[in-house]
Amino acid sequence: MNWDDSIDTPASERLVGASADGEDQAVEAALRPKDLGEFIGQEKVREQLDLVLRAARARGATADHVLLSGAPGLGKTTLSMIIAAEMGAPIRITSGPAIQHAGDLAAILSSLQEGEVLFLDEIHRMSRPAEEMLYMAMEDFRVDVIVGKGPGATAIPLELPPFTLVGATTRAGLLPPPLRDRFGFTAHMEFYEPRELERVVHRSANLLDVEIDPDGAAEIAGRSRGTPRIANRLLRRVRDYAQVKADGLITREIAEAALAVYEVDARGLDRLDRAVLNALLKLFGGGPVGLSTLAVAVGEERETVEEVAEPFLVREGLLARTPRGRVATPAAWAHLGLTPPRQATGGNGQQDLFGT
Figure 1 (tube, rainbow, N blue to C red):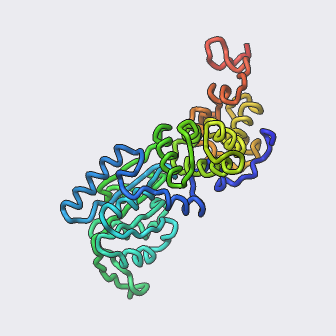
Figure 2 (cartoon, one colour; figure 1 turned 90 degrees about the vertical axis):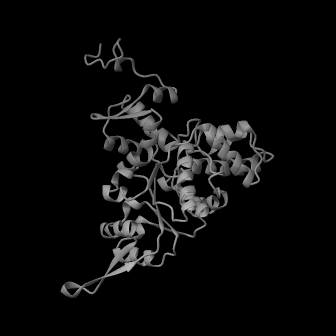
Figure 3 (cartoon, rainbow, N blue to C red; figure 1 turned 135 degrees about the horizontal axis):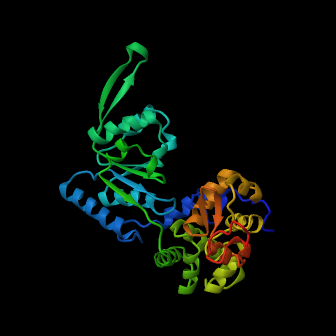
């Protein structure tokens, strides 16, 4: 495939995408740790959450409401299940987009058992009427159910049993302050270090009955974008390659060969990421170039480039967003093995406006 060919893989199907499809969800259910002791990474969050849960158990009370923020695939759903397990309580799982009316939320809340954990994923996408109902439910364990319409409508107060709400969001800034303030514990999930991901890969390999050596685990971890979900997905694809092309043991060489087939390079970039960088470097000399122009050059929608490819490229220091447009960094030129055009900079490293 040439660098400027259009990308024919939907964003949701990318091997290095952080969203989970049906297969990922099924595998994750088997790989999820069951308690805080098994959970790898997020040391500060685990320590703080452990104190919250221990104190609640000692008081014989339900745990405070918990807000978990961070990128997809870092373990927010897993932690919600661990909270329920640590508290010895059942868990109910739903999502913000599924709650479009206050009545939807009222139906869920009214059926909760005492002490139950309600996990609300993508809580920032909940409808405003439901959000306002949630304020009272979180603070007073009560909701007002509206019966009837127009002048004859009546609000009937409905008492709720104490419960713990665990909200998860990838965009904490979109949550209104009144909602954020009602959470007793707020935690931000950070991207994982390669060493932590190596432990994740070894643990998952053991559960999947896959043979892997330390160098093979390190190779997979280094291409996983700091995300356990991606590490587990890459492990499964490398496992398939090792079973078909080798003796089943995952070594560094096998991992490199397998991920070359799937076009995931040493820094975790896939062909969409490289297409964006190649267009920026080869067509536009490293920029600056507008987002719409860059998207056309890649053959993708503007939103795909901005929301799917750019966040990781910016985080890796390969691309910068400026008021004038997107600009490649020296690391981008080095990663693709290209030499920046000499006329792009003057002797002092600053932009040479006169081309001298």
